[in-house]
Image 1 (tube, rainbow, N blue to C red):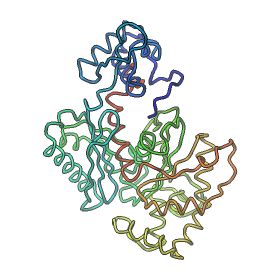
Image 2: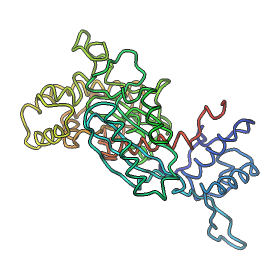
Image 3: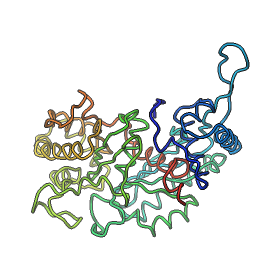
Length: 401
């Protein structure tokens, strides 16, 4: 994220509660990551922690090799002070995006920079095939970079939810929620020997856009994720919001047509029955679980095929509904549209849907609706950041556990 000074937030405000040692360490590390190189005096001012507390925490973080001390520039007479900066390569994390045809993976450092990336096709759209691909990815990295593997702290996995749902049956063509069952995650943790952090793909993509793409430096935005299905991810006040069960943003299951098309979730008239790649594939008679389908869609867009243009025209009112819902519920600074769908499709969809219905709040021209900028690895990048957050980012749970 951009290094800007902002008012105190939970992630950068410390506490002197007796049980808050881990929280305070995370707070200080977050400040160093986002604002470093930074002096210990400035860290104390930002976090509202005492200078002695900061001295102790910085010393302990240095012992753990998470930060490093460097001399600041000399200003006037006297010796230069010391500044604290992040040792960005002290820890690594996998980020793996699993859809129904492919696993896309990155390994990122503490600063969110990708140091390794790969893709692996799934043999079938099953949790077993996904597990095999994930295990193979981790094994490949371990064999190639055995010296770095001990610094890997975990694995973030992103897939299409909803997770833990009581209504979505197996076989939903827009979901891969079977991958996220507690039993399967426990199996994967044993196979990989790494702690796993699960996130839905839209929320992970929002995190990725916040670090690398159109959401960089934006405190409040919504990400509209086009995979096979349709979802949304939210970043509010700089932090991802996923809801009490991790399923916030299941926009595709908002009912927009009473007594409409039946949906595998058990309801009828859900938005993604009309606005999703699944809906487009049904219209064109294309297979959903085949990587070649995306190539076919790109070719049809380039050829200005009448059938796909007609589908987009019919889908525009549904996209307007989605934007209207997100703007009225969240009042975001911008809505970013992206996903694993071909970029040419998304650009044409936005172009044909413009102008959008008037917004209630005034929006900056050119930033109300934006194309995602983080690319096909955005979900995997976000998944890695989610994993890092579980280890190093401040959280309420660290105050009470």
